[in-house]
Length: 154
Image (tube, rainbow, N blue to C red; front, side, top):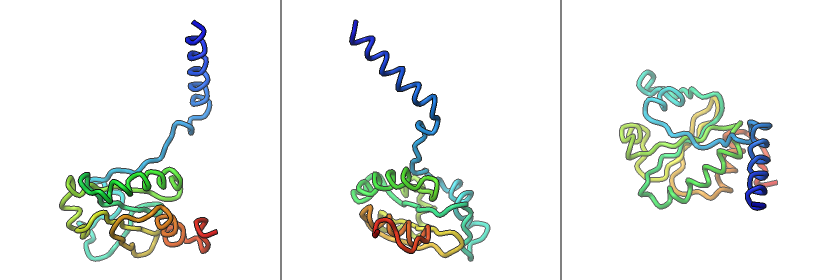
């Protein structure tokens, strides 16, 4: 009986903590994109095929991946961590190339994983292959956020 009372008390404290701080429940995760959401949130290549025009309001990383891709499975948890760390500063998007072959083909995703790094008001850059978390941070801070001295190097 004492164990049930203790468990009930712990659950009550946990729930009251989340109720008091609604932000505690929010976890920023990578956002899955389809062709339609890519056209809406990132780049409408159908309307404007000859000139890059990013539609977002903050920099982004687009991860082209597949479930069968071993290097993709290595970078996936890294991107989830980075989405949580930089959630208010960047978007982390994911595109499953098997579910969106037209989109993958249009953007040249032939080797996986492939990452499209999109800064604000500049031309995006691509990287292919699994990257360590430190490399992602350097790109985020120096290229996407334009921090001249990234925290990963401080």
